[in-house]
Image 1 (tube, rainbow, N blue to C red):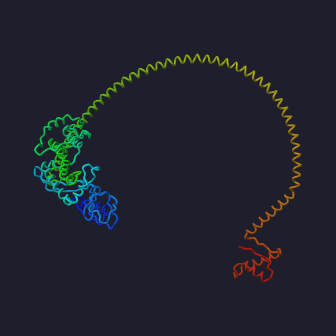
Image 2: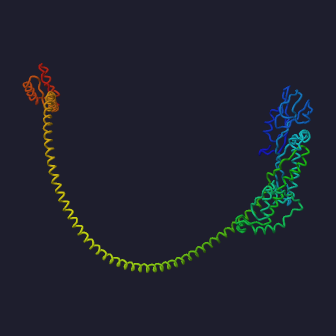
Image 3: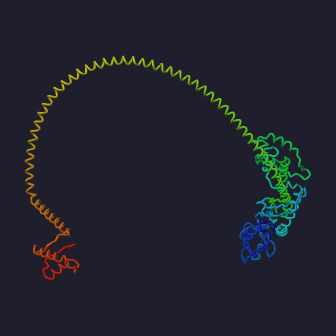
Length: 537
């Protein structure tokens, strides 16, 4: 296998044991046939799942139930039995690259093809057409290396024959296409409609045209152009050309017929290869054209042609864009002029309507003023009549009210005098009762007060003593906080006088002590009569 994971070879190799078959086949995609060694077990041997196994006895192949392929699992046989070959049941891929293939117009190209194949060794009851004898034939007659060489030669012959039948402009159409995809590709070109859907049931196989019968010019061209003119698409054909670019109608038809020609080439190649390899026990399941490469200068020519088409389309679109801008500016100027004229006409019509409405308004105002004057006159007359009737009614009501007020006043005064007399009597009675009750209550209160004074007298004395002591304490506190107060000792006034005289006598003496109080204290201590304490600050 090459560095890009392409299986460009088929090999067979020896294995140390059947137990290593799964790893060996999984790691190497080119391994098709393995030859495992006999494991030293005298009782049984095993066949792994997923492989066709050939078994030998003393080197000669033996069958199992009239089949050369032994089933997977454990087989209890002597040590002279061994699995000689393991052939994979899986489909395997073989890649080939065919170089320097000449086209019909002598242009070289290279084509990479991948073949998917398998060994037809299943039981016929499981897979129709298979035969287990194909495994033995493949191992001993075809071999993996021989199969690879035959496939290279057969593919090279088929591909070179195929490319020789087409032009280099058609070579990219060589691919595998389903019938439905082919019809959906060819039908839009013929009918002129892009992207029509074709159901799978309506797909029909398209035969591969021969070299002589193929022609670039087809009578369908006229029909295609006619159908293009009658297309039901919403986009006009000229606008479509600006959007997707223009090219010759022959180019479009050539692309369609190239797709038609190359659509079934893989099926034809697969049928041709199966006709050659099925008798050898190999079935080609699929042929895949992976890559087609033309010379660089041919590819550049195709690219430049596409770019020229795109540039032409771009130039046309730019021209149309500028023309559209010019048309839009002219339409804008026309619309502005038209709207200006309509605006002036509307203003004049509005002024006329405003004048007409103003005249109607003035007329309505005059009629309104006349109606207001008539209403005011009628109101004055009605007001006078109402005033006269009101005055008469007021006078009548006033007289009646006065008579009623006088009557009510007399009745109220009479009733008031009566109520006043009764109230005075009741007030005197209540006052007498209250004075009596008050005297009784006062007597009772005096009695209670006297009794209370007798009980509270000791408490009052205690309170007075307390207040007196409190006052004394306040006086003492005031004296204590006064720095100019001198407190004498127990000797009375003589000691205080002596102390004051001594302090005065020593006031002018030299300052031998820290303070005069210190000196007086020393004198008192020395005399033994320290009965005076002096407090200074």
